[in-house]
Length: 149
Image 1 (cartoon, rainbow, N blue to C red):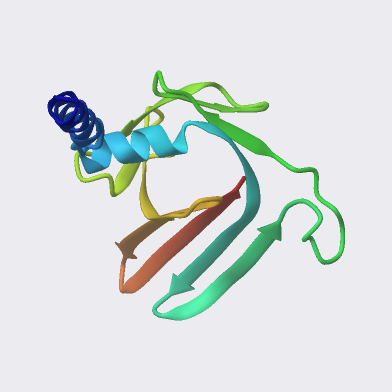
Image 2: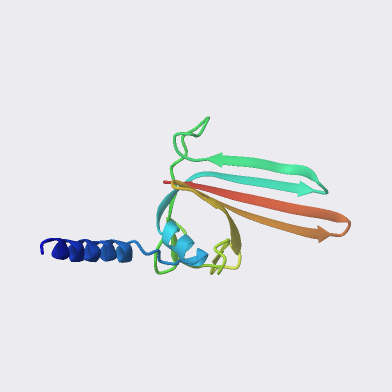
């Protein structure tokens, strides 16, 4: 008689564990939105400009203790769950993540859309590329923001 209550108990326990371990589907947009929420200090900013394929500007600004010559004040940005982007001495902006989770678009046109190159546990790299033709010359601009936690 004692074996039947034990079997019922074991079956109930197994069904509770099985139901508790169900995977919840989450799309890329939700994943990125949830992941980036928080404060992210800048590690570096990279700017590369080209004219007809020749580099005219190659500048890297390194923040914090990694700075080789001078310790630049660490600048931190914050992404909120409500879709706000907050940076000290800059207006608070709205941001949105596209459905694929590949791009982040800010509400100010001058900042525009950035590609989310990768997300890691403690770092994010955002990139932006633009090409324009002026007369016979082709200009390309590359910007990269490296954020760390």
